[in-house]
Amino acid sequence: MPNGNLTYRRGEIWWIELNPTVGVETRKNRACLILQNDFGNKQSSLTTIAPFLDRKNYPFVVNVHATSSNGLDRERGLHLNQIRAIDCSRVQTKLGDIDDGYWREIEQAIAVQLGFTF
Picture (tube, rainbow, N blue to C red):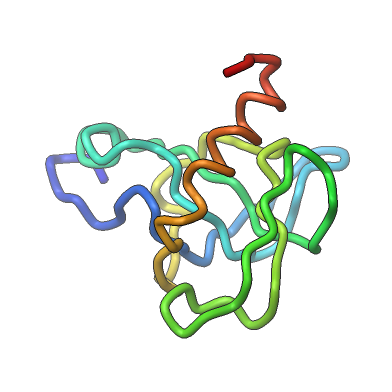
């Protein structure tokens, strides 16, 4: 968050208000993963997120099982093809934290989406 206050951290899952949108952008209030590093989260009024939507078997989607620590209601797909920067005012309520075991898959899905290779 701006002014040096760190309210949300990389790896946390928050309810994010995505409206208003244009075209086929993901809309509504959605569970989203904070992707931006904590230095950026502390210094900027923007953060980078990816939404949880339906489970899919695409190389840019990471399917995440619901657990008590992540706060998801059921298995969801983290859609890394819909990464976006949002204003901090869109960040609402914390649900939980992503399990560390998903980070390698997340990195690979981002690389696929952006056309990078490992």
